[in-house]
Image 1 (cartoon, helix red, strand yellow):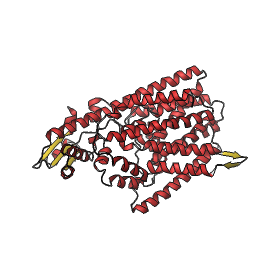
Image 2: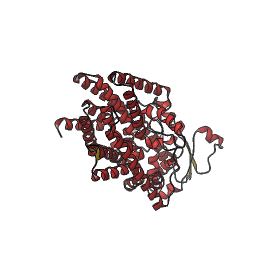
Image 3: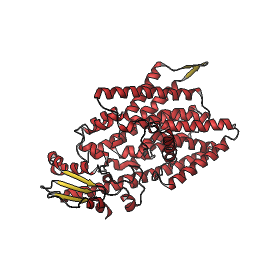
Image 4: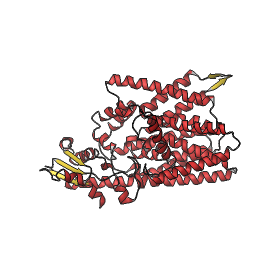
Length: 494
């Protein structure tokens, strides 16, 4: 590894520490974390992960949370992800740089891709939310699966040659990624996508990549069915196959693909502003592409455009094949990276001077880094720490022996937006943890357990939640004897 490579990796590590330093000290629980901590001794993670085809995720969480017993110790789960990504960065750098050089693309693409990797919204969630602490393994496994196959493809005349060792390794790493988090498998296509945007044509290598990805999906599906049989579990209803392809395509183009073209800027998933930015970036890219490919025939341009659409769809394939229309930021890692590579390659192809390309790459990198700092601190962790501190203070001061039930009024999902002016996005950014009606119970029980030191007292506590004050008052609005009312909506509004 040369001096330039070492310098870039040191820079990326320093950037991670500067942006994500609260991961070492921040004390809070965010939605699923409350269940994972409180129910660590039960089979909750087993019953949610295995039926969804994430057996390895269950094993990882079982191991990590068996060593975690307090809210403060959840920091260790987040650090597991943080240091996992640091260890993965050299591999990501090696693969991206190898692919860029091999395909004759501008070297500035490597810098921009690596900076974007640590700044994109999915990465922020992977670091900040321990419910996603396993993603670094899934993303790297999928990338390795595609890279091993891509590098192993050779031709003897018309005959395609790939060693059996590479095929086996690609299947193992690909299936591993799918058994952790299916959406991360989109990283498998990154090597083939870089090849595609460099050649601007669908080669035999790309056909092989797509065909082999289907082989991996089939192997995974058979293995998944086998695990369900072993554990005598039904498949999760969330994994039911889609029956309306037109509806899925409309959703894909209006939500996941739109989000991928926001480039670290966070919009509410259905915002008009977000669609305008999406349309503007897409129109600008298309205009630039027409300039760079003005000598190509209309047929070649159409094939290139269709190829890009297919790549984008395969990068988000797990979302497209299931009935559920939900595509949060954490599912879009691969699609986000593909969108960045596409637009960046087009920009650099328009620039003839290397110094200008360096300035452009540096400028975008600075923007991504600054926006990542804002997104992590202001749109995610800062308001969650305030919320948790307020709730902990209420329990510390108001809970007394003899209290047997707690009635909880949840804050609205727009509470942070109204108070701090930040943007809510899916169930990840700008949303109070206790806005989810199922989150207060495990959070409150964990806090009572940590205050009293007696888990049985916390287990016996009856916790009932209402989505807002109107719903509470409509139910009667009275507390039973030994009851404590916590109006989180009012507490956060102060």
